Length: 148
Image 1 (spheres, rainbow, N blue to C red):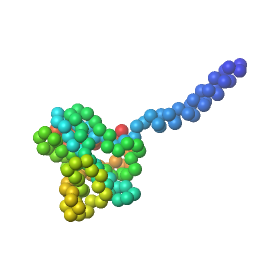
Image 2: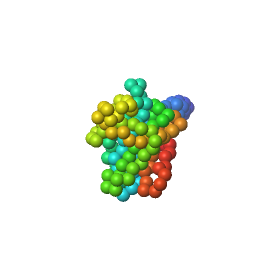
Image 3: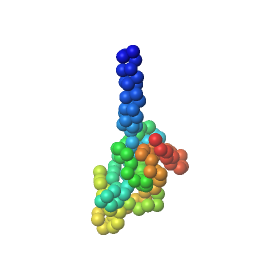
Image 4: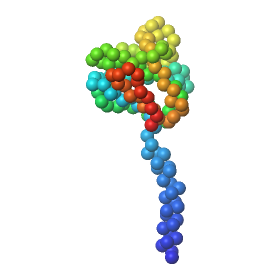
């Protein structure tokens, strides 16, 4: 009788604790997957407490994925720009943000040229406030996006 009661208490405790582990196991992030046969350089833009931020470059080899932001996404909108290193193809949009030649983290999107940066057109992604998001880059027109 005593062991059945302990087993029941263990099962109840396990049922209460399991969602905590499951929530920790769900890996929240913003990922980009490269569905092309070439190396792709990727930059991301987003709104943070210090203002607009752009960061790059992530080098994403063919048929692989890269995590650009780790952890639960804090914004609804994220902005992406990518270039095919071999063929020069680009994934762009009409939101102008600053980039640099080499690895960068830039605060602000105004006066890119005057501050010594380049200006590129980033594509907007509305994550709908999902905790995770993935963008699939491909050779075919139209970049797919999804939530995780």
